[in-house]
Length: 263
Image (cartoon, rainbow, N blue to C red; front, side):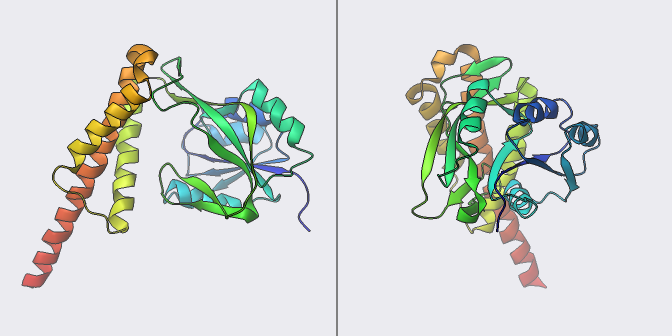
């Protein structure tokens, strides 16, 4: 019989600058902390062990894969899944403490509030950005993509939304955010390629224009000022890069196939 409690799972890679903020916010909420690390070269491991976390090193093959692996390590049925650059707000901590001993729903949704360069972004499609982060691991699995992955609950699952925000320190500089955009776009393009997806010559530009219009105008990104423009324009750039790189992968596939046919 599964023992009652909450397992917190966090995946890491060189997270020394943010991991303590995350870990300190779940003390008293999580009954165990499991960190699955992609062979960090900084002090991430030492900082995690300060909080009695179980620290497991595991090769990174994608966010979804890493999180599904972490589920196999959990001792408890209910999982609190956080990223290293996230932390519970005081109000969300109170909400979790209130439901912890009476987990009657299969999953719990949190609003996520993102911070970009020191500013909390409350529009631009960044908020409320509802996330399913506390869930019964027997009622679903991580899936769909290896970037922007979500935990998919089985049909008929009972979902409850909790008060309070999951705080997310997205990036503290434009350069850092740009690097993340390029990395995530590369992973997303490869994911689409593996699924057999194709992109027309117009796809990168169309996705760029639509994403910018959606986030900056329809989701009121302009109300977030200069940083609103930056996150919306770079978000649109990520869509452009994703479909550009998908086209590149398709061209390489065709060229390689042509070369093989000549042998």
